[in-house]
Length: 616
Ligand code: ADP
Image (cartoon, rainbow, N blue to C red; front, top):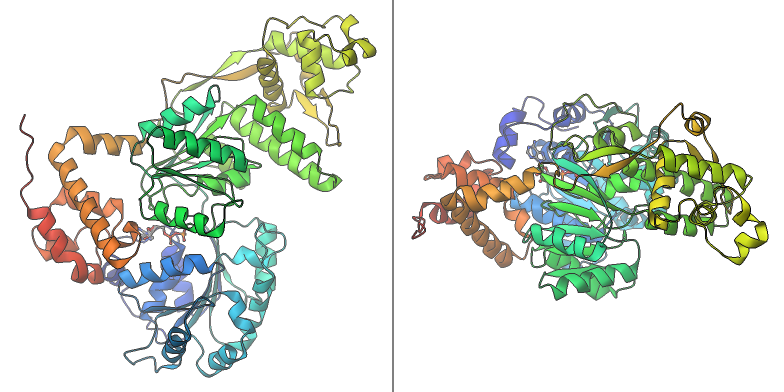
């Protein structure tokens, strides 16, 4: 590959991006590429995959071809690259003929020429185009980067048949290193990707899935509508995503928030494309603060300053939860991942799972849900649980910003007596019934079914009548979480006793269930940052707001989202350092040479205007 290996990468990092340090693994990936090796990279969202191919692209002689699955995302990627002075272009079906011709010329241009490109983004379907392939043959790229590489695998969750064509690339462009990136790959998917893309003994980098800037919390759902409203109001003005399980719930929540004067908009597959795109764009541009969405919202969003992701319904799997909540805090700044957990939701989810006709699919869905229930109902560190799911053991130190468990907001209450009642009902009814029926028995329901089965005559019938059904469902979920009860995978799943149940029944062992102390939330640094801006330092806060307004103004002039101009971290660093010269401004985190030249003067003026101190 035509790459200058002796380039001082650290200096380039500072010059292009204004960053002083590489994030973990970035340097390793870049070094491997510079040595001409294929690489396979699994790195979580926000880990900094883009820089791994952009930096080599800038210092290489020739263009880097980037394959990315979504046309909607390409524009942002190109805008973000250009904002850093990187010569980026795109080829996709949305281009006007003249633009397309111009990009093709740039692709064919001599690498040293004015019009040459550093980066060319294309969608995989481009490889079906003969003219493009011919040009690629004539002018091979210096490097090929495949984003969202898991799309090539049928084992993954976003399989795209178009990606299969990419397997030919290594043969077609021999000697060109290929870098494949994904944020989600089990080892099985990894092997599949490497094989299908025909990577040549790739250097494999699996980064930790830990997202240190995210805090995790589970809240028991009681009055969901007021809980959601209060949650959003406490975070007024901060961009957030609320996930809901159905379109109807999305609409309800969005409407309820709007009624409270919050700039919220819905996003789901039932909306027409124009509305969806508009809502997404407004969210990206910070014109609305909250997007309420089904999981249809996700892959097309690259917004880096999402400060919270609230799941108001239980996600289908821990993997899904990790990916969706991981859309918070891509910029590395503190952000919150909160799950509202209600036993009723679990029952609804189970109901839908039971209607799946394919036995294998049904069993898989039930297992995934059980993992999710275990996560929500457990009293051990949430981060440890999430990382364990990815086969990692977390060696980090727990502190109060980690999760609600580490913050001491969660404790275990003794439910041994309730457990015995439930287990006894399970045994006495012959281990042949599902959760709903067991709850009916325990609560003494007087239904025809109960009478016909004679379950009103067993000893446990009605002994739990004084507690509501939702309480018994929570007890059963807690016992399922701990494996003391087990649910079968059949179409109509029944519950039976699990390991340790006998000991609980005989009183040798106790059973517990999580309880929340709502006053003790994890000390979320996002809140702290916001508070320190607002209260502790009025001058700093005012300056930050002024910089934010300037950023928005420039973003609107350029027609790009604000975070493409500068991230919040850059603005807060700027507000803190108060640079008075361009040299000093260049020292601010995230101010590279291109941004300094383009916006430096305007930001300097905004910083150096004397703040209007409050009159008190
Ligand atoms: P990914 O594609 O892995 O989800 P991105 O490439 O979008 O993540 O990077 C996430 C954020 O982290 C971006 O705002 C990016 O500018 C920032 N970032 C990347 N590398 C660094 C670094 N070395 N130092 C500081 N910020 C970085």
